[in-house]
Length: 257
Ligand code: PGA
Image 1 (cartoon, rainbow, N blue to C red):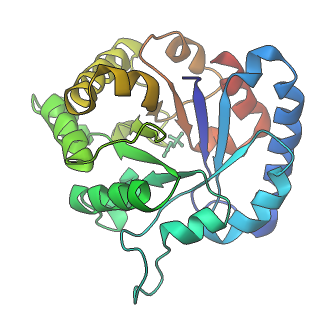
Image 2: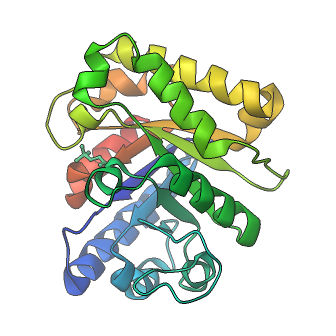
């Protein structure tokens, strides 16, 4: 599978700003797609929900794909303020971020909800779920860290099977590294990713993991620290927040993969 770089614009841009940045992405990666090297990487942008359809227009003639930052776990019904996977699909999304730590923290999302959202996505759409896992600073310092991550992965995917045409992404994002500029040690990422890979292999089998599941890293990735991270075997891509708001910085990350 080719590597993937996902831009998470969070709640940082209005509609006009999102379109403007999306146009810069489209231009940059349209040019880049001509170079064989960059053509093999997937680039995804996840703007705010209300900007999705406008951003889709802005990137439609480019290799840049569209993703959403959240989805609800029911197909349809009286769920004020929520958005269904079918609506996201209609808006042109091919990816959706599920269970980002900011939603776990501020919206009290738990892994039962994350599981339901992942299942809903796979059951009722062609959209690829990007399932976030990651430990807090307290967990990091405790011996339970590895068990916590394994349990998050297991809860999110329990009982879920991937059909041959489906893919999933696990984003390992240590909460203490998100938006803090605290850079994780490469050997630390390598160990965590190896462990996550073993957990998904246990659930899905080696072949499915090899061809249908990516494990990506997120947390203060930027144009400077990306080189060291990109050379690691177990990283299939990045989920990028702050650095995705500047096209040159983001392109640097994409080019280093
Ligand atoms: P950051 O955010 O790159 O700003 O740390 C990453 C994320 O929240 O996905």
